[in-house]
Amino acid sequence: PSLDHVVSTCLAKDPDERWQSASDVMRELKWIAEAGSQAAASTTAAPAARRASGDRVAWTLLAVVTAAAIALGIPYLRSASGDVHPIRFSVSVPQNATLSRISFPVVSPDGRRVAFVAIRGGTPLLWVQALDALEAQPLPGTENAGFPFWSPDSHTLGFGAGGKLKTIDAGGGPVQSLCDAPGNLGGTWNRDGLIVFGYLTGGLSKVPAAGGQPTPLTTPDVSRKEVAHRLPAFLPDGRHFLYFAAPSNTIWVGSLDSKETTRLLTTDSQAQYAAPGYLFFVRQGTLFAQPFDARRATLTGEAAPIAEQLASNNPVNYAAFSVSDSGVLAYRAGDRATNTRTQLTWFDRTGKALGPIAQPDVYRNPALSPDGSRVAVEATDPQSPQSTQDIWVVEVARGVTSRFTFDPGNDIFPVWSPDGSRLMFGSDREGGVFNLYQKRADGVGREEPVLKSPAGMLPNDWSPDGRTLVYRTIEGGFPLGILPLVGERKPHLFEPSRVNQNTGQVSPDGRWIAYHTLESGRVEVYVQSFPAAGAGKWQISKGGGADVRWRGDGRELFYYALDGRLMAVPITGSTALEVGVAVPLFEARMLNGPGPQAGFKQQYDVTRDGQRFLLNVPLEGSASSPITVVVNWQARD
Image 1 (cartoon, rainbow, N blue to C red):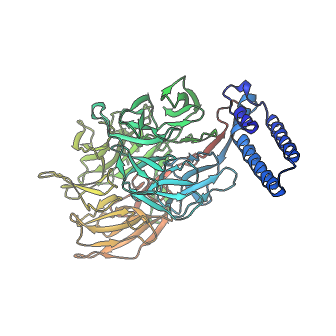
Image 2 (cartoon, rainbow, N blue to C red):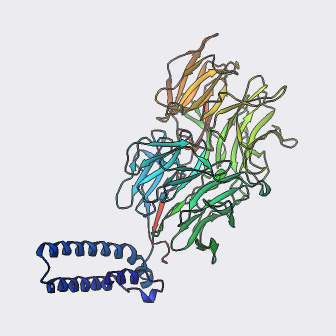
Image 3 (spheres, one colour):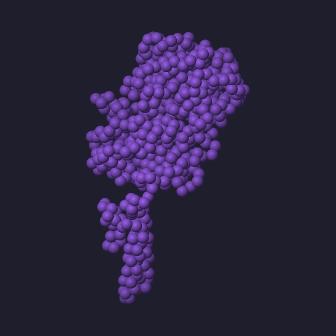
């Protein structure tokens, strides 16, 4: 009873009823130990062996209670005394690596480690930083990992990679594949060994943490015009969970035991619960914490700002923050996934800079027109609080930039028609799902819808004869799709069984298609016959490569190697493809570095003669912002 009294006092709800210092706790524990020793000494009739055994049990119990008092009691003692201040520090970037711009820190439930994705050797890799260690440790086998999440005991990490949901011990070890999860967007793990995860489109699914067949858990409500449930997070009871509904940008509470859902609030990001009772979320770049009763699933107070200018992956509403129940907060600020300032710059084949075009801006995904006189590029809408993307067109000779799209949604991935008269692009303006649109390149007239699908899609290339569009699907593992632009215009997958095919570009003669894929476990460049797959297939890159571009006569294929070099591969053969030896041209510094990242395609283009390269180069000082960790986030400075 005495020991129980110590712990109960540590956890008293009223601060005045708790111990007021750690010294109080220790004095009480010493008194209990001394009283126990005296009682044991007075019981002279007990056998010696029994007395020794009892002493061991007593001291073992005392050690357990002491640890419990320190672990559970001290946070309350500090809050009550009011003498604790928040501690802030940055997580160092691993050596020879760069932080991924679109994967953010995730704090373990015990607050002792932070997981994140960084790029090393051109490949995204999962890293773990122990807060009591100087350096982060990579986790081999997690190449191309995304959207990591922790097990409730802080020992294991879940993540998506290669179209599957996977787990790995946080200290390293073999990777376990749980189930197919193409396009996975975040997960959450409860103490009963169940994982709930979501996709870019569609509802949430659940799967045992040991692996198995996933089963549907939620279905987007058509009456609310929902198209996706994403980024789930369990509440403390492990039965209820938060999730983000798109395109309404609302947070809901769902349950494993019921189909009923409760709407909480409107937000621009995922939401996460933190003890003793707060809901974290982001609005217009600011991180808020709002009092929240998890048992009743109700907000109980006003939201307070915690940090500003948080990074975010806008197309999927994933913001750069994570918080533990132990009072540890991690976030990234100062550079949203779409706001790194870059300069569009010409280079020759030796890597010599030939000069910039236009003024520096927040550019990404440039595409040269067929005649090389214009560049279509994405840039952030300066008037949008959500930093949505629009397409702009740069006149190369004059360096003049003109806005091309004006709707409030995201307009991305511009692709020129073969004659340069039109631009195809993807837009999420209707319901938050990317569909295909086109518009006259001179800007006259309105955008025309080309293809719509609840699965979502983005354009990759236009065949040289103008009769076929190559696009990438968003749902189902990102396989390439083919849309005939004449006749019945019935879309179909290029290879239905393949996933993660990206930046597909058709050769100038229309007989081949080049793309990169993760099908071998590492991103590599391949060429296949076109428009029908199966007549021939060749691996082009060796040691990893992505982001392909054809020379205008089809005699050369360029790609971005994972070591950061721009490569050129001779291509010959009239009936069968003959692939020459890849030749390195120069080390190319481009936005995001080598290796594929969601929401981006190649960050360069090449003139038809293959002599000049237009690179999207990040400006000095535009490096990715560090991870900030705050211990005792509730305390005031």
